[in-house]
Image 1 (cartoon, rainbow, N blue to C red):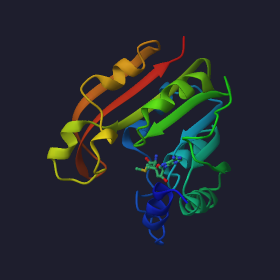
Image 2: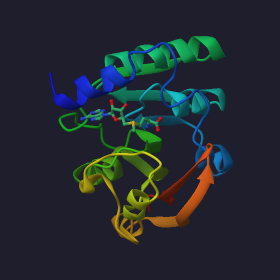
Image 3: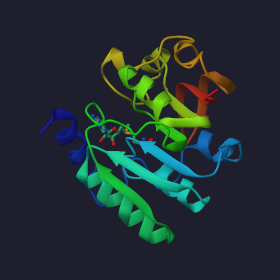
Image 4: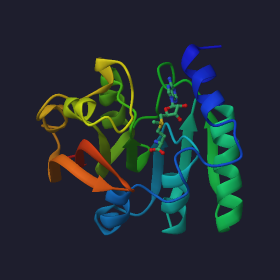
Length: 191
Ligand SMILES: C[S@@+](CC[C@H](N)C(=O)[O-])C[C@H]1O[C@@H](n2cnc3c(N)ncnc32)[C@H](O)[C@@H]1O
């Protein structure tokens, strides 16, 4: 078993939802910019964003390495009366099918070498919504990952999607979801 899997299974092992049941505020605010159809939620965790997408009419595939996270995703989906397809996979190894998705969501999961696979997995005209921590977040003392590789440098996310049409981009410190966080958020379209 991978150490990531152990760590996240432990974090998601409690009855309470470690990351909450509410969707990410950036996703919630910009849901109208996202093209309806088949969606992939990368590293879905306990499914807060996947379930929100399903509630808004998306057909959702939710992938994660944590079995406990995916069980909670299914629990939340049942609670909200929606259907989600869950896949227990190691995204480091998983080949995302080419041009399968209208939307790929990636929240708080930064693996730079997966970016080309996200791009390939989208249909032409499909969109990606992405948000994760900036390096500055480490100075805030409000939680988050330990290792520097999991943080974005200034403008890095924008550059990672420079071959897409960027529809929305922001960087900064935002007070959302009850705590301050330094993040970059992007919505971009495959052209
Ligand atoms: C910070 S959580 C984010 C969860 C979710 N995206 C959200 O915003 O609520 C990171 C997630 O990445 C998952 N993860 C870590 N390594 C992974 C891998 N190699 N393949 C798939 N999922 C992985 C963890 O299990 C965890 O659910």
